[in-house]
Length: 106
Image 1: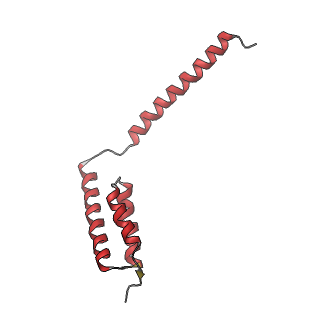
Image 2: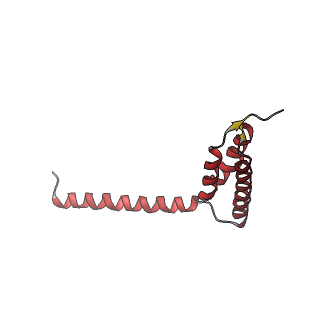
Image 3: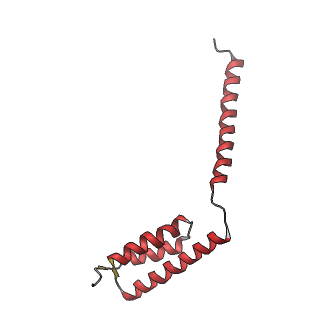
C-alpha cells in the first residue's frame, strides 16, 4: 500500500535524482566545450578573412563557378561555422548564394 510518507519519499528521490543527473550532465557538457585558445582564435580569424575576401571577390565578379562554390562552402565556410564563426560569414555566403553559377572554362 502506498502511504503518504512513502509517496513523499518517492517524489523527493525522483526530483533529487533528476537534479543530480542534470548537474552531472552540465559538468560533462562544460568539459566537452572547446577551449578558447590563441590557436583557435587565429584559425577562426584566418577563415573569416579568407571567407570574406572570396565572397567579396565573387560578388564583385557577379558570378561564381560551381567548383569554386563547392570549395568555398566545403573548405572555408563549414569549418568557419563549426568553429563558432559569427553571422557575418553566413550573411556574405547568402549573398554569394544569389549569384549565377557557371562552369569553369578549361
